[in-house]
Image: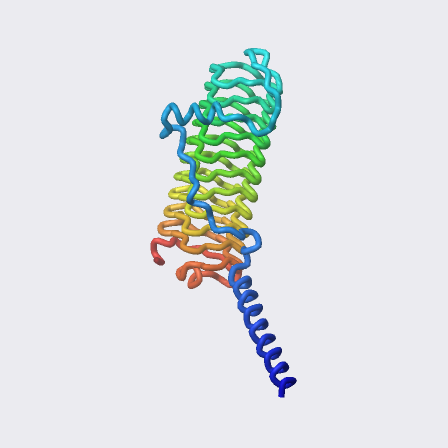
Length: 309
């Protein structure tokens, strides 16, 4: 009798284990991007743009001790050296092409209309800096920190800014054709009227980012988290969103002709008034009903949503 009870207990345990395992597996199949995006989009720690900060808040950013423990000599203009301390320096209109400014601390500096193309600014810190109208074309800028900085109409064409931080940055009108911005963080940034033709944003985070009228024609936004961002009126012809998460993204009036959403999560996306022509939705999930209803045999959509929602 005891042996039968023990056997029954084992069988019940095994059945429960199989049920739980099957449920978990089913959940993973329902969300194929769970491995790529294991966490929910973080909308609780959005940094405010510098335009809305009080002077004491800006000073706290500038005076915050650095974590990299690099000894920084007090830098002087025009002899800027790697690892210099250039905080709060006025560098308006400087002409410094091919500058080696690796690890320089530019926090709170005024760096407007400077000519700094072909330089190396890797690991430089531009937090709370005013870098408006400056030209960084063809520069190495990996691992830079532009958090809460002013980047109004800054040029970074053909520059590599991979692994950089743009949280809360004012990037209005910024231009970066063919720029590399892989694994960057643009959470809460203002990217209105930016131009990033054929730029590479692969693996970046653009949560709650404002991209009104952004020009992203041919840009690569694969494996990105774009949740809660606003692409109203954006030009994204032939842009790629392969395996990206677009929860509750606003794409009203966006130009999506030839765009590729293969394997993307489109939960809650607003496509009202958007324009499609051979737009790819192959293997995408959480598709709006009107998209499902109008896909052709190749998983493409070629209709205007205003007539179909």
